[in-house]
Length: 353
Image (cartoon, rainbow, N blue to C red; front, side):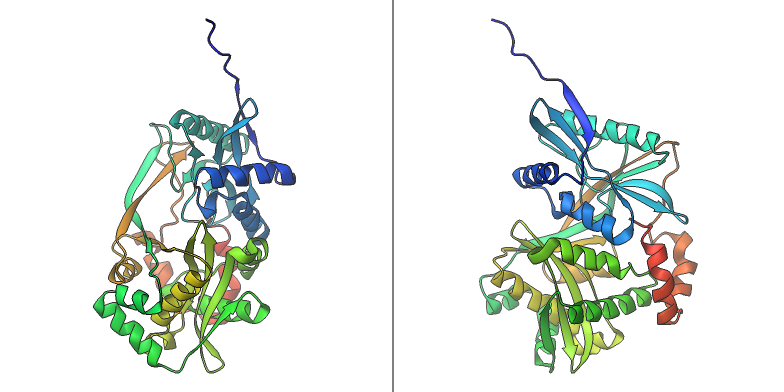
């Protein structure tokens, strides 16, 4: 009996102007339980909001789609150029049922990088060929189930963190949720101040607008107000039954008000009412303050593995803010007047990816 014919593999770039091509990849992401950062919609939002390029690759076998690698072509005069999966996300990487298909996509990404004179590739998850650099132990993710109701959710939080949430609940604070201009302005004001205080350049507001505009009901902003002053705010993503508070922060005044604790607790209830069953607290640098904060809320760290490839051995972008080489720059940035930081930050941050 003759063996069945095997269709030849084809790797090509996705046409982001073709709705049918995009819909096909979106269906593949859903079928393989990919993350929000695997969605072509995410790459489109990043391209619209930052000016970087959406360059995803698909592997096809006959008429079947067998693999997908979402890629953002990031360009920066300060940090260089890189293909990132996925740009401005904390996940991504190859999505394929078979490891050999994943490796084929990685090799295709190398060829694409060389054609575009891009020296580096960064994959935030998935798999990679054995000769790629493996990055482990630097980041962990925190996620867990949501409780059945508000009181059960409160009791699920460990005692010390729960006491801080209760203090926040006693304060005279208002909560709003939405994606209107008022929500966006409040969020950007709070987020920009928060990251300046951490010594980090703020992303352009156009990035947040693009994510909200393209994601629709899959993204919103929850803000905590003291009177008419926003003190904490978070832009969250909703995907596959989980909520991820992705871009959030608080002003200096939020600490005394326990507004950040109130914000995350209120988001848990809001997400549950939207039908979510999981709370994805997202990624944090191992050993950092946010790492400890999330662990104190009862979430267990899940180590993340990333992969990198460089055209020149031993090189590669360094955008790790905890690296010693950035300490002086971070200290200087913290002292910048907020209007100056907000003017310079987006130009720098859009090249981080």
